[in-house]
Length: 576
Image (cartoon, rainbow, N blue to C red):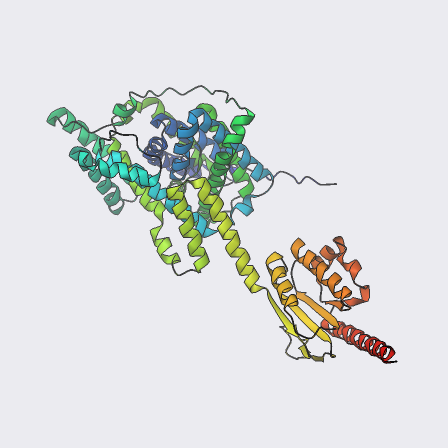
């Protein structure tokens, strides 16, 4: 019978009131207000880049941000839309529309909840680092490329291709339509974002750029007749601050089958980014994230958000760090951040309509720059070649094709590289006359003499399919003289897989057919259990499975002596 383990769901907010003080509450309020203000331009910019309205970005940050703080496993995590999702959201909307995005997001939320319920939070952390760096850099390049029309004010008279190379081809053909005023707005915004942190780290650069540039553009429009600089209101019309009523998402099997790969990509990307953000936060605060609870919380957020027309949500590293920097230490700060965004959404949307698109493009260009991780990539160039190739391939596939293919192929390459390394670390040694029986930690050495006809094959490392193939090839191309007894020394074999078991079975059976006896030495308990379950031990006499090489050599020498005696007797009979 299978025992169902208890659900590992312990939200950080559940332990909120233990020792919670008024001073802590004030710090959380301040942090929540600051982070809420910082989140405004990012939520709007990410929404527009993803192909939805600014209102959708704010609704996502409000609903998703509150849910992540209320149900997540990290006390300082700030949830919301992030740049990592831009590419996949844009592609899903282009192919399946907003309803398809809602379905994929809802399904991704269910997948995240299941990952948490099955306690896979710790497993997600083992996604190879080169893959994370590769697709993050690829996303950064893609985000950067999508902002060129808004940053330069290009007038494009043909459909923009969805692929990277086709997109840049369109940009280059229309580069002569650059709007100088729009470009100046973009450059001014970029300059403010870069310079502001050097003046004051407490004043967010993106927010400063939006406020200052929007005011300057308003003055330029009203008093100097400047035109041609597109704003959010010009692009999307007047956006009011009415909260949408939750709606039911219609599902059918055809749509589920169609959208499942996209939902899986959203779920994996959300899990990786949220747990990465939580790990960074733990390193700063000294706390410890419950990974499974965090995945369940992220899942609940992504199940809820599409009911209000929102886009995928995950933990945001930059906003989480801003929360910590400004004194936030409990989920209250994250909830306050969501409430601040709600108030802005309800009462300040007319002002947001005046924000120039070039300013948001500058915000996203800086986001892309920070995401690119070029310093990390430069530092990884000297890493093992296998890791570098995984990074490069993942990056190129993300840019040229899409994130789903990049993660799938990247994971496959990473697994191949890992298996190759493990296989290379599994060595097989052959002994024919003498054998040193000492273990690595022994200072004295016991040299054992092997009788003629006895060969020892020592396997050092996991006996999985890669090593099993190597072992099989060595046995086939072994010594020219056929042995009488083969000792398989397995003291350093931590596990054996089905291929290793199969090859071992074939070796035993074929050896017996050739009249060669098999003796196993130093079989660990876990390996012995695997051999017992597959009935391999029934092919060998119990006394031929030894705990130590000394006893195995004694048994093998005696078997070789007996076998030589049998062969010599048979030869005498033939002579007569």
